[in-house]
Image (cartoon, rainbow, N blue to C red; front, side, top):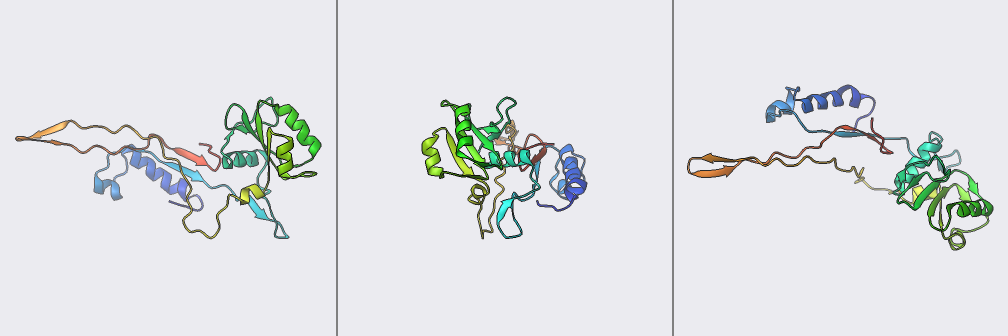
Length: 214
């Protein structure tokens, strides 16, 4: 389902909770004899990440602060958003040695050199920045083997699909409860098995664009 406004909170969620708790007596609940159980997950869509400025150029939406931008790009690039308290350039990780750093600055060769020195040879860093000057991405990769450079918003636009009518939110399935195997029922001289109960999601909650729950 997709809802605008507060209908999700004022109508849909209260109804779904009643269905799960077995307290809803109308509609399809009564028709199928639903006695409660199950779960659901809902998502709040964040503002668009890329907007056009007054000249028609794609730019980062000013509604995004630094933390929102870092979290969004970490998710987009397959990293876990986990800002380090000790290393300013670690905004997330995909492994114990692979990290992501997000900034809206234009980075110079001197800044990238300092960043590469701090990252070290045993780790790698994806640097997402507004621009880097004085070198190309290819020359940067050759010069600093522990850094990978990507420009915002170009890296975001490269992931977009245009002119499609089959978009998918790619919602990850909830953990499923184990299927309950019913005991065989004896009827006369024949034995029949009761139908298995359908597995249901184990919990409820909200996910945001960046994976937070309420």
